[in-house]
Each structure stands twice: as C-alpha cells, then as structure tokens.
Image (cartoon, rainbow, N blue to C red; front, side, top):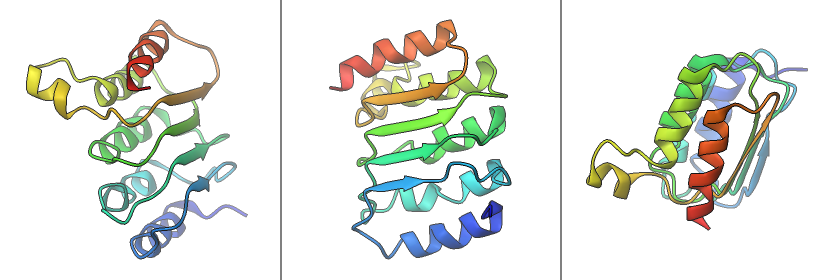
Length: 141
C-alpha cells in the first residue's frame, strides 16, 4: 500500500516531533510526487531532524520531485545518505542535486551548500552530471 502525498504530508508533520529516526525508506510508494516531497522541507530544516539515510527507490520523482527534494535538503545538517531512482530525472533535476552539493554561483553559496551529504546513490543510467555530483560528494567526507 502506498502512502502518497497526503500520507507523506502527515508523516512530515509527525516527524517534526521526532528526534530519533535515523533511516526512512519511502521506496515503492509510487503515488508520491513533488508535492509530497516538498512537504518534507520543514522537517529537514528542523533542529530535531536526526535522519541519516533517506531511500526513495521505485518512485518516479522526475525533475519536479528532484528539485523539490534538493530544495528541501538545502539547509539540512543530518542527512548523510540519499538513495533514489533517477527514472524521469533529466539534467534539470540532476543540476538541482549538483547545486545542493556545491552551489558555485558565489563564494558565499559554496559555503552555504550542503556539506553533510556524503553518499548520493541513484538507480538507473549514470549521467555525466551524476559523475560530477559524485566528485563533489568526495569533498564532503
């Protein structure tokens, strides 16, 4: 049974009161879209967020979902491992993850980039952008 966007929104609200969850597996929840992923933003930016691993396999998040997830993780200081299926994600979505890891638009943006994530695993064909992301992730270790 898939929780979908409404279920993920409810989960995100509950997670705000949880400082113990280390791993969240949302795999196989094919009804999750960018709307649901966007609802995680407040949790990921919360000081109570202790999540270390997020797995989203077999969910076709596409470019909108990739951008929403990258935006939500912008100021997160706990997540170290992110695994997702890259089906439906084009260079636009992968660029959002590259910007998350190292926003090179200015020295301040580089400083404010997410330097906590050290593993980003994708399931699908690896693009040149994904190779660049892997290179930048090596600096976060």
